[in-house]
Amino acid sequence: MARLDVIFVDGEDNAEGAVDGGGPTREYLLILIKSIHQSCIFEGPETEKRLTLDTLALKKKTYQQIARMISVCVIHGGVAPGFFSDRLYGQLCRTRTPPATLEEVSDVSFKEKLLKIKDARTVQEAKAAVEEAEDCLAIVGACRSISTLRQRDALVQAAVDYFVEGRLHVALQQFEVGLNTLGLLEAMREHTDLFYNMFVENPSLLKAADLSTLFKIQYSPPGTWAGELETQNICYWRDLLIDIEGKPLKIGDPLGDQ
Image (tube, rainbow, N blue to C red; front, side, top):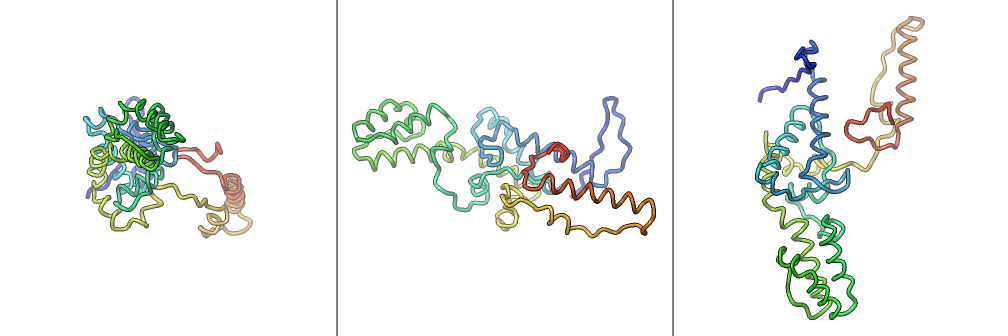
């Protein structure tokens, strides 16, 4: 596998002149991951993205292309997404996922109709709500007659399951093909726990003390100008760590703005 080298150029195609020792490549991949995070193929909270259905993206194989980009980011730069939802990660790794919930239904109109069915207090109210949502339920294959509130609940869950997972089957397959570029998906399925924190946000935040003890400082001889500058810079570094401690940073956020 050839190594990925990146060189940034200005508007006149003049290279910056630096040899890529890993810095420019990583910077480029961070920018790429930030753009991927805002892609049309994802929906949901900022740190819990799941796939959404976009028929144009499906036709253009955008799911596969974006997943391939993610693979390159991880393999060539160690730059991981960190914004997948537990459900999406579980779907990709083929591990058990929790039942889909109404909160995950992104279509507001469809969600309201399902809520009306779910909140019906009697079978008659539920039947009336089902009749109102007949067209939508027919599209997801969940339009059926009910005679008990238990059947009502089963109908709602079936509709939610299809909307959240069933209708995305082809999109997920396309995404899997792209993510297996360079064998990444196979590795994820073999070592699911090891890759988890790379793709799903890790709720445990680093402490300032953790990073402070991570490096061993080698100062210049005492009394030298270099030693004084180093001491000053270390103070700045520790102040920065304390300042950002406990604050979640988004992809691409400059530390100085926190």
